[in-house]
Length: 136
Image 1: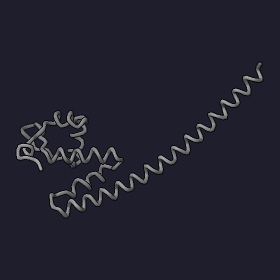
Image 2 (image 1 turned 180 degrees about the horizontal axis):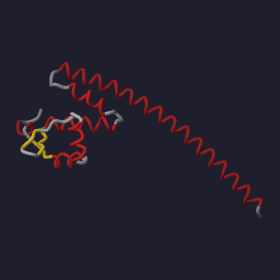
Image 3 (image 1 turned 135 degrees about the vertical axis):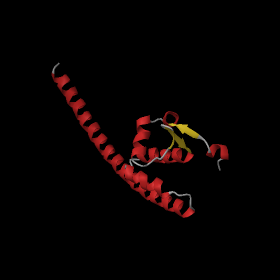
Image 4 (image 1 turned 30 degrees about the horizontal axis):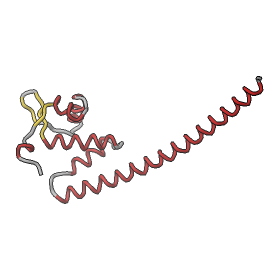
């Protein structure tokens, strides 16, 4: 549980970008896409705890290979109610299962390709050895 002081914490666009390792352009892009809705103080964007949490979820989803619309579906689902959190988690788990299956398939493909590369390299080395022996 967070304290009232933590809940009231805010970040500028630069502070939040630096903290989460993204560019300010990324934050503005996510805002333009409707994924973030920072408050405004004059012309300055002010991000609150909710914005930060949403951004962390979006960035995690993107790292996992999720599209922006999939990220939006997950983060927009949460309204604080237990039922929405459950729905959010079930949707996220379903997508994570799909991602894990895809990654496992790619991993198997990479293993097969690497074995083939190793086999061809072994054949090339063997042939070079034969050619080097014939040149003596």
